[in-house]
Image 1 (spheres, rainbow, N blue to C red):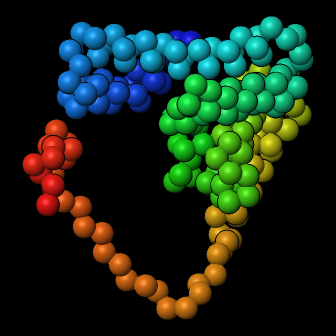
Image 2: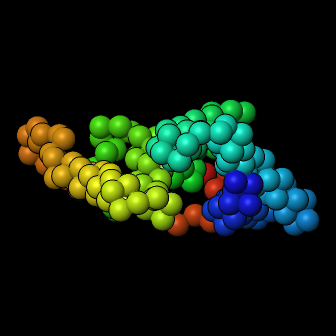
Amino acid sequence: GYAYGLGLFGAGASWVYVSLHEFGMMPAPLAAAATLFFCAYLSLFPALAGSLQARLDLPLVPRLFFLIPACWVICEWIRSWLLTGFPWLTLGYSQLDTSLAGFAPVLGLYGVSLTLVVTMAAFTGIFHATGCTQRLAFIAIAALIILTGWRLTEVDWVERDGEPLSISLIQGNIPQDLKFEPDQFV
């Protein structure tokens, strides 16, 4: 879990270094150390999820479908608010363009994370199944989740209220290092 977290946050939160060094004017070695420390801290959450599920001796099916998904999503949720939180890189965000996105209006972000982990548990179970019947059950669970999500993407969750309103957003091309300088205000 910790190695996974280091890879995830090392790649996904590398922008913290740019923010600290380029815009916060922090010296490069200190910004790199702070970013590494931040990623190491964030990696504790997937490590905790892995450690918790490894400490409990449960049979394969309850471990795959209940313990691991619960540990993962609870750790993601805690990471989103503990010490002011860091909700970026939650697994549910990765499903924006997949059939599992259909669960978002019903279950929310953490529900999408949960359905993804349960779906991956079903795929993992296929390779650990002890017989053909169990393997088919894992395939059926994965297929049911994916197809349900796909059907949910077809639902219109909102209704149009009146004619569409045309709006425009204008963003000035202001360099980040100048945007807070008082002499730049109009």
